[in-house]
Image (cartoon, rainbow, N blue to C red; front, side, top):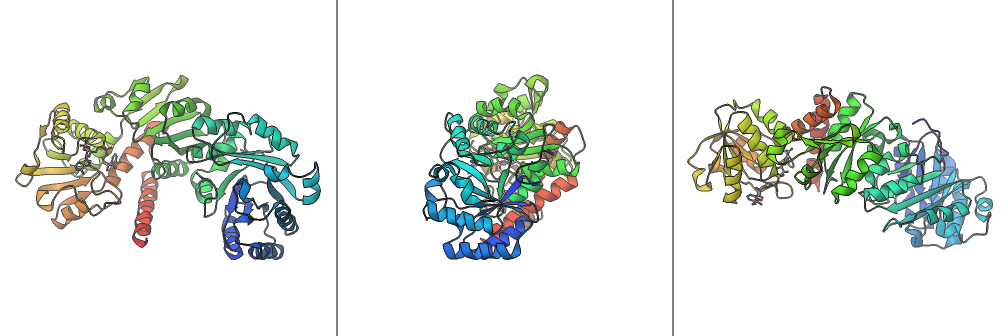
Length: 507
Ligand code: NAP
């Protein structure tokens, strides 16, 4: 933090990219509310007329910002269909219109005589860039030398990263240097991309609207959720590991908590296909703790140095604390989530609760309820699995045929039936809901078909979002040792889910 960049005070660079000048100008105005460093993707404009229009607009309006003009040719992964001469002509006009920097790909810079680029750009500065949209080469040294030979004012390396290890190699190029922009592309590279500024990169790119490269984080998220320009060596890094992980609400939940408590901490989504790759990154990234989601909740147990006995009994861990010397300690807060969500509404001791499903979430729910003193009944499509779970918690197995005749204090759905995009489905029929309360562990949608049917019968309902919030809040408190700002965290998640549902409804 605080290191002055060659590009000006704002090190988060907004990427403005659209087919028309009018749309680019609109995005530019939006970007300037959050940062004064902006890349203009001139190659995204459809045709020369729009390029001229935008540059004329710039000449008149002269926004107070560091503008980077990019007109990448198709051969280098851009959209500009012209040749090198036309590309350079566009960039020279951009400098005349007020752009301070020009991004020139290596493929173009190498075609010019030594010093040719500098004399052409005049007072404009050159950012010599190199992209590989498919992979990260085994040696980046040769790339670096190639870029340096072009004698620009700064260099940029952007490669597709297929492991966290690769993203760390890309980011290492910027260590200790002021003039290197390191961009690990792709969803796996995303956490290191957010951490790039604290790791030394001169800029971190974020699109205002449309992603121009894989794995990009939007400008608003980069600035307001992850606070990429405020992170420093003392920032405590947390995250969630899973596959898939892109739609996880955990980054929103946890970062909202850190922001509300003004903590120097960040929480990032790690797409993890290979657990070893992530475990090796814990030390270099200084990760202090992480959430675990599918498919790693069981496998992670093998890599722990210690584990909460209840998590061990459940056979799944969703929370890991990294202790001194890199020792990993596991907990299960899904269990806490179910308990907190239900105990407020049902006197658990002596109650009878039906769990539908016998997977990971059902196990956490069954242990939580048994611990709370409830008699657990398990129904699952696989009778053997239902029997195994019932035995583990001293409960009983229920056959589906008995549901119409049996009464429960609560019924918990722990199957994915009714989850978006199959939101019209219900795991149980209306006449099978003979109980005082129904809880669905699903939270997309918040009000599932099952909950709607229960409500129609006058039965109290609890959405899976309650469990999601409670398990996340318990994680946050384990890591921070503080009381979580629950109201702020809850409002952020509920607002995001409502927005998602509105957008889905509109689509
Ligand atoms: P899981 O380990 O895959 O278990 C799913 C269970 O549902 C299994 O018993 C499976 O039976 C059963 N099942 C799947 N499709 C079924 C169908 N068509 N009919 C009947 N049973 C079916 O998954 P999980 O991690 O337990 O997750 C279950 C649900 O809980 C998901 O919707 C998940 O989103 C939700 N969840 C919510 C939270 C939260 O914080 N709210 C946390 C964790 C999970 P088989 O074993 O026979 O396949």
